[in-house]
Image 1 (cartoon, rainbow, N blue to C red):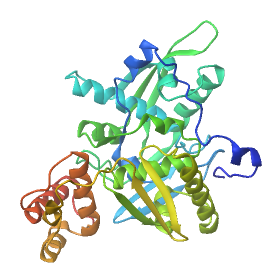
Image 2: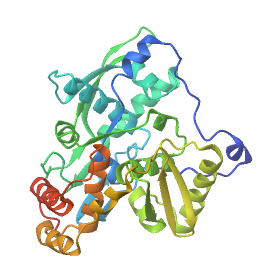
Image 3: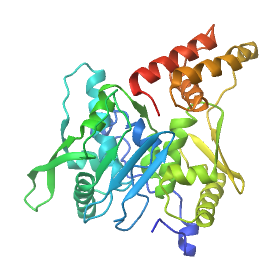
Length: 355
């Protein structure tokens, strides 16, 4: 079952986990030089379970020509909290790439560093949780046509291919861990199909809050706002709740966010019973409003894009184009129609037809 709010204590406690980072700790600051980053494929699609107990159901998701089947091991599906391990590994590799160092699919790290970076407890519970996460990540098997790094992996694969406890302390706790990432994840890293995430992500308690943040970061980016129907949000989140229960969970998150402003970067609101609106908290309107007409597309451009896009939803591609410009801090192009069609051509070259 997904996390439910059934007791008064859950309603009154802080919506955020405690900040377990010790201010002024030079060692932790060194770790955070590797800015938290997540791969766009798992931000866009519901790869991870939102359950707080062992989820042993096979999941199948299809949207806009993409499909993904996630098969659990006997320990259950990898959860959205298990994903912290992947985020940590991706962040370390991207930091190395940006520094010009050679990287590989195999990452070795100190368990203590990973726990502190992702705001986890560093006692026995933290190490036990890390081991369980590694087991679920390697045991969960993926079959998909979702392309990363312009490559489609046609065989079944794990979110991580393998892991090894390299060294243990005298009391049996893991000290160093070696993780081999899957080709699917590593292809995304090499192609820089990743987005920076707010470190406050690791303080979010509820799995659904983390999933909403993922989708907001991917689709809203630095735009003023982004809207999505409650039904589509349920589908893209991977929630197994009924629509009525999902509405209640989202309403509670929106109410808490209205009171505490606790969702990093974004304000989440359920404006009516069927529409969720995400507002980027730091949005600044352009000072020169005369530039706004320059980002309008001619209807004929969208018609041409349909021919180029080979089955892709052109309105989805338009949103991705705008997100790409916003994330890059780009000015409005002089010829937006030409720029958009160029973006569509490159999109199809890298990802192929959606038919």
